[in-house]
Image (cartoon, rainbow, N blue to C red):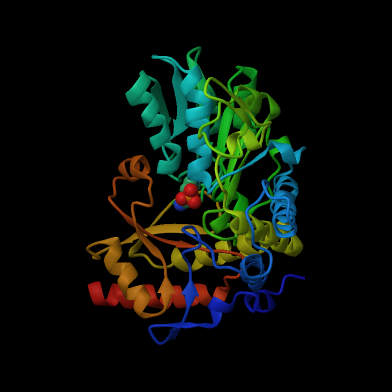
Length: 406
Ligand code: PMP
């Protein structure tokens, strides 16, 4: 049984106050809070078990290496990946996508080749492709969402032409919450022989993910949104794509031999992991994923679906609030603007006075903001520990903001 009040006690920060009010943390889309088990793992990692990994022949180095390397298996399990060696560690989705842009796409794509993207991508899944556009004449092909924020997978498949070399698409929009039918996109793309990169930064937080079932080629995740430490993360790559990848960064750990004249690389995944990594961060991520799997991803998804339905009902009762992204197939992420309010920042400042933490701005989604015809929105994004009572507090705070702007 999913007892949210018990779960909340695992997160020490949730019992603090902000501006004299109990914290209502609804900025999970930006970063999630950490359960005590993760905090303890990080503390222990530094206090008792710290050394650099891989190179040492001493006790602590071996211990740290064992713990750090063991997380690959946890991530593989979390993502339904067949083999832990297909997991490459990163500092987050931004690094994962840049790795693919530099290591896989740059050497392969030529002027006139195309990358198909949806209009609701995060800048992390846009700017690396702009680099290819600027530097080597790659063409970015954009697929719009409909008025509810839904993305028709067939439209993405239809956009794939003979020059398309990659589809890069988010699994869940960080602004609208839209869940994308990535499996259908992968099926269509595969039939046309085109690989698919999935930005799983938001999706993996809210629903069970199985990369084997999705049929994608790359799946990037962000540790700090998964209740893990900041600067932790991973990208899963299929064996075939991994074999085609060139290393993105050079340095220690990713090599076998280096001489004045040549270099031979380590075997994947270490071939793609140059330099001293975020040792304790990754160990903390492993604990966070075990924590989530312990609660059960299906249970988390069910809890958040009921929060979403409650929030839809409450927020749609506010007729001065414009909700963006009304497709029913969405995560509990709500973007809105308010009649009479000057800027989304003004709303979030008032909410903050009531202890309610939301985000305001363009959410690193410039093309989506253009598509919606807004410069900024306020975003309330929920996580596994949020409650209906917190949504009530959000609504009360919004009513106050509306009265003030009224
Ligand atoms: N993609 C999406 C959909 C995101 O929401 C985010 C984080 N806001 C990112 C990518 C980038 O994640 P990170 O900054 O942790 O690399």
